[in-house]
Image (cartoon, rainbow, N blue to C red; front, top):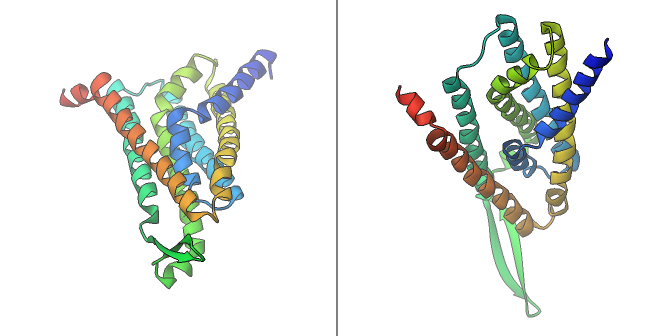
Length: 238
């Protein structure tokens, strides 16, 4: 393999790491990581996001490279708009994730104590393994949507960087490995405060709801910026 291609792939790897920590990626995965009480699960959320992200980038990217085509601006922006919808959904569901948890206060030796408990049915607790599966599937789906939304830019970057289709395929895979590692590191870090606050329910609830609120607000801004500022709504009317 030529030295120039190795340099290009190294740059692609670094760009992948950098790409993983873009605001919409970070916010989306943070809402998922906030649902975990174990650090290794938060880390795996990042890995599954990266796998989903790389899968769509690779498939769509190769199709467009071999067909020598481009995604029209209307479709590319619409896919980006889908990310905004997803961010709002993740934010709202994160905020409402504690709706079945209630607090009770009482005084003991003159001090006010607050206790939290859940009104969830026992059957829900007997299916924790299903929730774990859904957790990882959710992470991968978020990555798939992000990858789909970023496929247009990825193809342009790839076509301007490499000389052949097979080099493009390798470049996208290396870029994908970078995003997986970048998101693995990020979700490990972002999961720390949620893990340490797992036994402090009130703190954990506030952290999770703040994360959900940020995701919801950013998602609404994301859609407004695409629809109004960048003119997507006008394109839809044409």
